[in-house]
Amino acid sequence: MIIAVNTRLLISGKLEGIGWFTFESLKRITRQHPEHQFIFIFDRDYSKEMIFAGNVKAIVAGPPTRHPVLWWYWFEFVIPKILRKHKVDLFLSPDGYSSLSTDVKTLIVMHDINFVHRPKDLPFLIRHYYNFFFKRFARNATRLATVSQFSKNDIAESFFIDKDKIDVVYNGAKSDYKPLDETQKRNIKNKYSGGSEFFVFVGALHPRKNVTRLLLAYDEFRKTVNTDVKLIIVGERMFKSSDIAKAYNGLKFKSDVVFSGRLAPLDLSQVLASALALTFVPLFEGFGIPVVEAFYCDTAVITSNVSSLPEVAGKAALLVDPFSIDSIKDAMIKISSDSYLKDELIANARIWRNKFTWDKTATKLWQSIEKTSNM
Image (cartoon, rainbow, N blue to C red; front, side, top):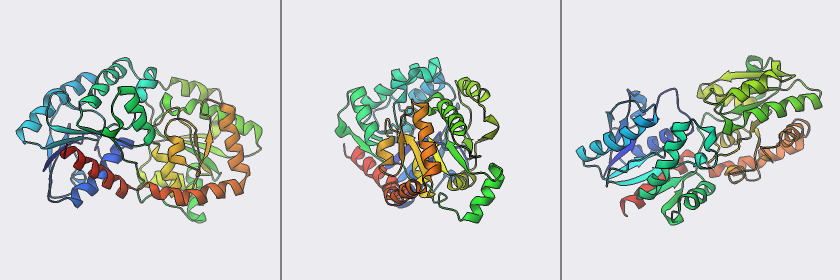
């Protein structure tokens, strides 16, 4: 079988959630199935580290897809031409985008449809592209995969698609995410927080990630508790982040908030493993990879009680109302003052985290590929 893959998000040094899903699953699938040929389609120059096995052929086909008009052109004209030229049997698109101009069997991984529920979080053209095309991609696809039962139900109900057409393929966590000993933790704290304990947030600085309320909750936590616990924000600024700057500038304890920017995977894993807790309280999430990464680091988790997060967290995290600053603040107080609760959450996570591995992701995605090819 010749399988073409949209690999435009396999950008070395810039992998985000969907990029990591693509990287970790394809690395395993291509090596485990040498009997099949894979064509990786990039929209710009690529790193050789992204060519995982001898049965992978890389094609660079521009232009780089940095704008909705270019998305349309690439998927409706460039992709179909490549699929025809190479007589492809199946097209896999791990980032939710697809083509309406091909009759090749297609498997789309649609991680979530946050744009349906929170369109104003996105710039005008992007939200209109998503809301116009993604429901058509979903209906036109031979089969769909997504990363949680929540997202499966949401996609099926929002786009009026049979649930039997959608497979659930959970995310995993890299082996870099593991506990550190006390000496290692002390070194990380000295490097990032002046030796103090800290909460950590991991994610893009984007309205949906709810960083503004997290900052306000942290400030209220510091006003309530006599402590020097800091807050580290790991992630890059995206569009519509002015509210974050406004909230930060109004904080009483803003000098104890550290914006680290993007961290390399190893650095991120060490920061996460050294934290008092992960404070990840988005307003909408299709999965929430940082939650699972924290589980593997033996780090306590505070996360939201909405969308997919209760499904991913199980009984291994402290759930909060992400719309309530007091709810987030109260969870911070509990984690910082109740060592028994913290240890109980970590113990639960050591069991629960085994549901989420990249090996299982690759196996489930390959099963979905086989179902698609047989339809």
